[in-house]
Image 1 (tube, rainbow, N blue to C red):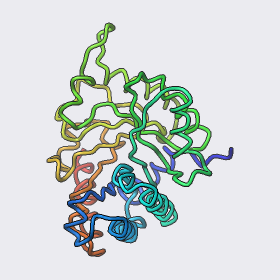
Image 2: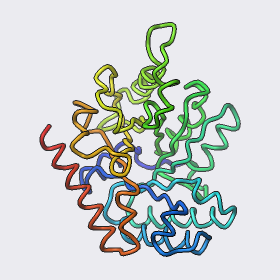
Image 3: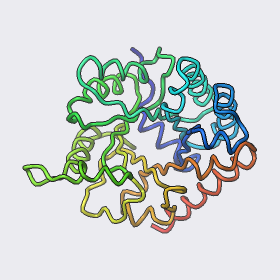
Image 4: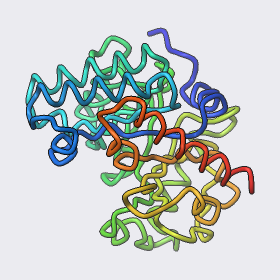
Length: 281
Protein backbone atom coordinates (compact mmCIF):
# COMPACT_ATOMS: atom_id res chain seq x y z
CA UNK A 1 0.00 0.00 0.00
CA UNK A 2 1.45 3.34 -1.03
CA UNK A 3 1.28 5.88 1.77
CA UNK A 4 1.10 9.64 1.82
CA UNK A 5 3.74 11.87 3.31
CA UNK A 6 3.42 11.25 7.08
CA UNK A 7 0.46 12.96 8.68
CA UNK A 8 2.63 14.80 11.20
CA UNK A 9 4.65 16.48 8.46
CA UNK A 10 1.53 17.42 6.53
CA UNK A 11 -0.12 18.78 9.68
CA UNK A 12 2.93 20.85 10.64
CA UNK A 13 2.96 22.45 7.20
CA UNK A 14 -0.78 23.15 7.27
CA UNK A 15 -0.52 24.73 10.72
CA UNK A 16 2.37 26.92 9.63
CA UNK A 17 0.61 28.03 6.44
CA UNK A 18 -3.00 28.35 7.62
CA UNK A 19 -2.67 28.69 11.38
CA UNK A 20 -3.20 25.98 14.00
CA UNK A 21 -7.00 25.85 14.00
CA UNK A 22 -9.28 22.83 13.78
CA UNK A 23 -12.98 23.43 13.21
CA UNK A 24 -15.42 20.68 14.09
CA UNK A 25 -18.28 19.74 11.81
CA UNK A 26 -20.93 18.91 14.40
CA UNK A 27 -24.39 19.02 12.83
CA UNK A 28 -26.43 18.36 15.97
CA UNK A 29 -30.16 19.00 15.89
CA UNK A 30 -30.11 22.33 17.73
CA UNK A 31 -27.48 23.75 15.40
CA UNK A 32 -29.39 22.65 12.32
CA UNK A 33 -32.41 24.47 13.76
CA UNK A 34 -30.34 27.63 14.38
CA UNK A 35 -29.39 27.55 10.70
CA UNK A 36 -33.05 27.22 9.72
CA UNK A 37 -32.55 23.66 8.51
CA UNK A 38 -34.64 20.57 9.11
CA UNK A 39 -33.23 17.80 11.27
CA UNK A 40 -33.05 15.38 8.37
CA UNK A 41 -30.62 14.24 5.69
CA UNK A 42 -31.36 17.24 3.49
CA UNK A 43 -30.52 19.59 6.37
CA UNK A 44 -27.42 17.55 7.18
CA UNK A 45 -26.21 17.77 3.59
CA UNK A 46 -26.83 21.52 3.35
CA UNK A 47 -25.03 22.15 6.64
CA UNK A 48 -21.99 20.05 5.77
CA UNK A 49 -21.68 21.41 2.25
CA UNK A 50 -21.78 24.99 3.56
CA UNK A 51 -19.07 24.36 6.18
CA UNK A 52 -16.80 22.76 3.59
CA UNK A 53 -17.41 25.59 1.12
CA UNK A 54 -16.66 28.21 3.77
CA UNK A 55 -13.67 26.69 5.52
CA UNK A 56 -11.96 23.79 3.74
CA UNK A 57 -9.71 26.09 1.73
CA UNK A 58 -8.81 28.24 4.73
CA UNK A 59 -8.32 26.28 7.95
CA UNK A 60 -5.71 23.63 8.64
CA UNK A 61 -8.07 20.92 9.89
CA UNK A 62 -11.74 20.02 9.70
CA UNK A 63 -13.04 17.45 12.17
CA UNK A 64 -16.40 15.87 11.35
CA UNK A 65 -18.08 14.15 14.31
CA UNK A 66 -19.18 10.82 12.90
CA UNK A 67 -22.06 10.31 15.33
CA UNK A 68 -24.05 13.24 13.99
CA UNK A 69 -23.98 11.63 10.55
CA UNK A 70 -24.46 8.04 11.72
CA UNK A 71 -27.77 8.90 13.39
CA UNK A 72 -29.31 9.23 9.89
CA UNK A 73 -28.22 5.74 8.87
CA UNK A 74 -26.80 4.90 5.46
CA UNK A 75 -27.90 8.20 3.91
CA UNK A 76 -26.11 10.10 6.67
CA UNK A 77 -22.96 8.08 6.12
CA UNK A 78 -23.17 8.90 2.42
CA UNK A 79 -23.19 12.61 3.35
CA UNK A 80 -20.18 12.03 5.60
CA UNK A 81 -18.28 10.32 2.76
CA UNK A 82 -18.94 13.27 0.47
CA UNK A 83 -18.01 15.76 3.19
CA UNK A 84 -14.67 14.08 3.83
CA UNK A 85 -13.82 13.76 0.17
CA UNK A 86 -14.72 17.35 -0.69
CA UNK A 87 -12.94 18.78 2.35
CA UNK A 88 -9.71 16.94 1.51
CA UNK A 89 -9.98 17.93 -2.16
CA UNK A 90 -10.24 21.58 -1.10
CA UNK A 91 -7.03 21.35 0.89
CA UNK A 92 -8.08 20.75 4.50
CA UNK A 93 -6.76 17.88 6.53
CA UNK A 94 -9.64 15.79 7.85
CA UNK A 95 -9.58 14.28 11.33
CA UNK A 96 -12.44 11.82 11.70
CA UNK A 97 -13.84 12.16 15.21
CA UNK A 98 -15.13 8.65 15.77
CA UNK A 99 -13.27 7.72 19.00
CA UNK A 100 -13.01 4.07 18.01
CA UNK A 101 -11.52 1.54 20.41
CA UNK A 102 -11.62 -2.25 20.44
CA UNK A 103 -9.32 -5.25 20.21
CA UNK A 104 -7.80 -7.45 17.55
CA UNK A 105 -9.58 -7.86 14.25
CA UNK A 106 -12.33 -5.43 15.27
CA UNK A 107 -9.82 -2.65 15.90
CA UNK A 108 -8.21 -3.50 12.58
CA UNK A 109 -11.58 -3.17 10.84
CA UNK A 110 -12.21 0.20 12.46
CA UNK A 111 -8.80 1.37 11.27
CA UNK A 112 -9.46 0.13 7.75
CA UNK A 113 -12.78 2.01 7.70
CA UNK A 114 -11.05 5.36 8.07
CA UNK A 115 -7.33 4.96 7.36
CA UNK A 116 -7.17 2.59 4.37
CA UNK A 117 -6.49 4.58 1.20
CA UNK A 118 -9.34 2.90 -0.67
CA UNK A 119 -11.96 3.34 2.07
CA UNK A 120 -14.91 5.62 1.20
CA UNK A 121 -14.34 7.42 4.52
CA UNK A 122 -10.56 7.70 4.11
CA UNK A 123 -9.38 10.50 6.41
CA UNK A 124 -6.04 12.01 7.32
CA UNK A 125 -6.37 10.99 10.96
CA UNK A 126 -8.75 9.27 13.35
CA UNK A 127 -9.56 9.80 17.03
CA UNK A 128 -9.23 6.60 19.07
CA UNK A 129 -9.70 5.47 22.67
CA UNK A 130 -6.89 3.58 24.45
CA UNK A 131 -8.96 2.50 27.43
CA UNK A 132 -8.97 -1.18 26.53
CA UNK A 133 -5.21 -0.88 26.99
CA UNK A 134 -2.90 1.11 24.74
CA UNK A 135 -1.74 -2.07 23.01
CA UNK A 136 -5.26 -2.60 21.68
CA UNK A 137 -4.57 0.26 19.27
CA UNK A 138 -1.72 -1.63 17.57
CA UNK A 139 -3.67 -2.42 14.36
CA UNK A 140 -4.55 1.25 13.93
CA UNK A 141 -0.98 2.36 14.66
CA UNK A 142 0.37 -0.10 12.09
CA UNK A 143 -2.07 0.95 9.37
CA UNK A 144 -1.46 4.66 10.06
CA UNK A 145 2.28 4.14 9.60
CA UNK A 146 1.65 2.26 6.37
CA UNK A 147 -0.69 4.84 4.85
CA UNK A 148 0.84 8.10 6.11
CA UNK A 149 -2.19 8.87 8.26
CA UNK A 150 -2.37 9.66 11.96
CA UNK A 151 -4.15 9.01 15.23
CA UNK A 152 -5.33 11.27 18.00
CA UNK A 153 -5.46 9.23 21.19
CA UNK A 154 -7.69 10.24 24.10
CA UNK A 155 -5.33 11.16 26.95
CA UNK A 156 -6.65 13.98 29.16
CA UNK A 157 -10.12 14.84 27.95
CA UNK A 158 -12.18 17.93 28.70
CA UNK A 159 -15.26 16.15 30.04
CA UNK A 160 -15.48 16.16 33.87
CA UNK A 161 -16.09 12.40 34.02
CA UNK A 162 -12.78 11.64 32.33
CA UNK A 163 -10.74 12.28 35.43
CA UNK A 164 -11.90 9.16 37.24
CA UNK A 165 -10.05 7.08 34.66
CA UNK A 166 -7.36 9.39 33.31
CA UNK A 167 -6.09 10.66 36.68
CA UNK A 168 -6.21 7.25 38.33
CA UNK A 169 -2.78 6.22 39.64
CA UNK A 170 -1.27 2.93 38.50
CA UNK A 171 0.88 0.60 40.58
CA UNK A 172 4.01 2.23 39.11
CA UNK A 173 2.95 5.63 40.46
CA UNK A 174 2.03 7.13 37.08
CA UNK A 175 -1.48 8.18 36.19
CA UNK A 176 -3.32 6.48 33.35
CA UNK A 177 -3.22 9.72 31.34
CA UNK A 178 0.54 10.04 31.81
CA UNK A 179 0.94 6.44 30.68
CA UNK A 180 -0.93 7.19 27.44
CA UNK A 181 1.28 10.24 26.83
CA UNK A 182 4.36 8.09 27.42
CA UNK A 183 3.25 5.58 24.80
CA UNK A 184 2.76 8.40 22.30
CA UNK A 185 6.25 9.74 22.96
CA UNK A 186 7.63 6.33 22.02
CA UNK A 187 5.52 6.21 18.83
CA UNK A 188 6.82 9.62 17.73
CA UNK A 189 10.48 9.13 18.66
CA UNK A 190 12.78 10.51 15.97
CA UNK A 191 9.98 11.89 13.81
CA UNK A 192 10.54 15.38 12.39
CA UNK A 193 9.14 17.99 12.23
CA UNK A 194 6.15 16.44 14.03
CA UNK A 195 5.08 12.90 14.78
CA UNK A 196 1.83 11.48 13.48
CA UNK A 197 0.48 10.14 16.77
CA UNK A 198 -1.22 12.87 18.72
CA UNK A 199 -2.94 13.24 22.06
CA UNK A 200 -6.36 14.67 22.84
CA UNK A 201 -5.94 17.03 25.79
CA UNK A 202 -8.68 19.42 26.85
CA UNK A 203 -7.99 23.15 26.76
CA UNK A 204 -10.31 23.56 29.77
CA UNK A 205 -8.15 21.56 32.19
CA UNK A 206 -6.06 24.39 33.63
CA UNK A 207 -2.50 23.83 34.81
CA UNK A 208 -1.14 20.56 33.42
CA UNK A 209 2.46 21.14 34.47
CA UNK A 210 2.47 17.81 36.32
CA UNK A 211 2.15 16.05 32.94
CA UNK A 212 4.83 15.80 30.27
CA UNK A 213 2.99 16.94 27.16
CA UNK A 214 6.10 16.75 24.96
CA UNK A 215 5.20 13.62 23.04
CA UNK A 216 6.76 14.73 19.76
CA UNK A 217 3.30 14.71 18.18
CA UNK A 218 0.38 17.12 17.91
CA UNK A 219 -2.10 17.86 20.68
CA UNK A 220 -5.74 18.18 19.67
CA UNK A 221 -7.25 20.57 22.20
CA UNK A 222 -11.05 20.73 22.41
CA UNK A 223 -12.75 23.25 24.64
CA UNK A 224 -12.13 26.60 22.93
CA UNK A 225 -15.25 28.72 22.59
CA UNK A 226 -18.53 27.31 23.84
CA UNK A 227 -16.89 25.08 26.49
CA UNK A 228 -15.29 28.11 28.09
CA UNK A 229 -11.59 28.08 27.19
CA UNK A 230 -10.04 30.91 25.20
CA UNK A 231 -6.99 31.24 23.00
CA UNK A 232 -5.31 33.23 25.76
CA UNK A 233 -5.58 30.19 28.07
CA UNK A 234 -3.49 27.96 25.81
CA UNK A 235 0.03 28.88 27.04
CA UNK A 236 -1.01 28.42 30.66
CA UNK A 237 -2.49 24.98 29.99
CA UNK A 238 0.10 23.57 27.58
CA UNK A 239 3.27 25.42 28.54
CA UNK A 240 6.19 24.96 26.20
CA UNK A 241 4.29 22.26 24.25
CA UNK A 242 1.81 24.88 23.05
CA UNK A 243 3.31 25.20 19.56
CA UNK A 244 2.22 21.63 18.81
CA UNK A 245 -1.35 22.32 19.92
CA UNK A 246 -4.22 22.23 17.43
CA UNK A 247 -7.07 24.07 19.18
CA UNK A 248 -10.49 22.78 18.22
CA UNK A 249 -13.48 25.11 17.90
CA UNK A 250 -16.93 23.91 16.89
CA UNK A 251 -19.98 25.87 18.04
CA UNK A 252 -17.94 29.06 18.41
CA UNK A 253 -17.56 29.12 14.63
CA UNK A 254 -20.57 27.13 13.45
CA UNK A 255 -23.16 29.29 15.21
CA UNK A 256 -22.31 32.04 12.70
CA UNK A 257 -23.72 30.03 9.80
CA UNK A 258 -25.26 29.52 7.37
CA UNK A 259 -23.67 32.68 5.99
CA UNK A 260 -20.38 31.65 4.35
CA UNK A 261 -18.68 34.98 4.93
CA UNK A 262 -19.69 35.01 8.59
CA UNK A 263 -18.30 31.50 9.06
CA UNK A 264 -15.01 32.53 7.46
CA UNK A 265 -14.81 35.67 9.56
CA UNK A 266 -15.44 33.73 12.77
CA UNK A 267 -12.77 31.16 11.94
CA UNK A 268 -10.29 33.91 11.10
CA UNK A 269 -10.98 35.66 14.41
CA UNK A 270 -10.20 32.50 16.33
CA UNK A 271 -7.10 31.89 14.23
CA UNK A 272 -5.84 35.42 14.89
CA UNK A 273 -6.47 35.06 18.63
CA UNK A 274 -4.51 31.81 18.63
CA UNK A 275 -1.63 33.37 16.69
CA UNK A 276 -1.54 36.27 19.15
CA UNK A 277 -1.49 33.92 22.13
CA UNK A 278 1.35 31.85 20.66
CA UNK A 279 3.40 34.91 19.68
CA UNK A 280 3.53 35.87 23.35
CA UNK A 281 5.19 32.59 24.35
